[in-house]
Image 1 (cartoon, rainbow, N blue to C red):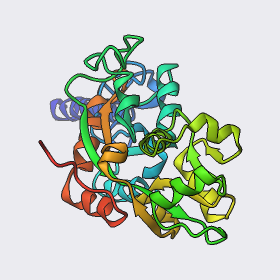
Image 2: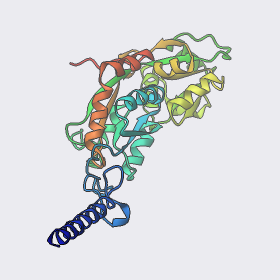
Image 3: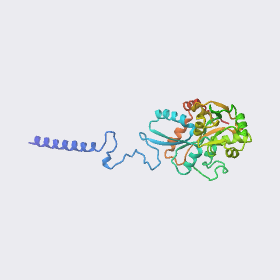
Image 4: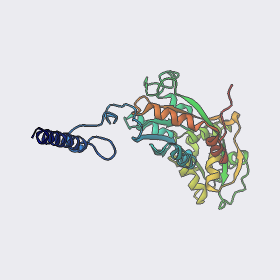
Length: 305
């Protein structure tokens, strides 16, 4: 009799233990996380509104504002980066540096800014010359700014032009004679600012040329490149990288005396939601594999000193 009672008690105890184990396992998903219906959240997940770095296994979405002349190279590099960092999603906004600067200033979400000119970056950098950063903006993350690339300003001549043009000297002479239509960037576009310096180098007044109908403007370097490719202008001043991407031949190269160096600064923005991941991508852009991609279209490293 005692044996039967003991057996019953043991059976009851085992049943209760098995029931408890069953209840414990039903609260977990197959991935090891919490059951969404339980009302609990996984402590490893980052709060999307906290600005904290995403934990391993989650995706960080980085928004990169970059000069239009970087469209092809950064698109290629993004594929390379995705192979090494599948957890990072890169979103690009390509346009003129002036337009991008305005968007950032007005509050657009941006993690990384790569400008085709120092002016647009200086206008948002608290450490820059106050005569440039006239509004006292403080949008650049401290110690993240770096001069990442150098480009070249070139003259490209349309195949449809009836005027013999080979050099900037030829361009200047034709403009003085009023026999050509020149394509150049707007005043807030770096390539337009470099072109203006070239005109000044030759003693040409941009406003007078524009009033005489000798200039066709583009809102970014891609638009000027298209004007040359389609024969809408006799010639255009663009970057050698855009000439390469569009299959155009550079007739002449501007010297530093004509327009200065064409330096591309890059920096993490202070409002970045993922500053660590953004800095990692900026560091990646300076590696040899990325520089090889940049150099294929005509960019070069910035020489120190």
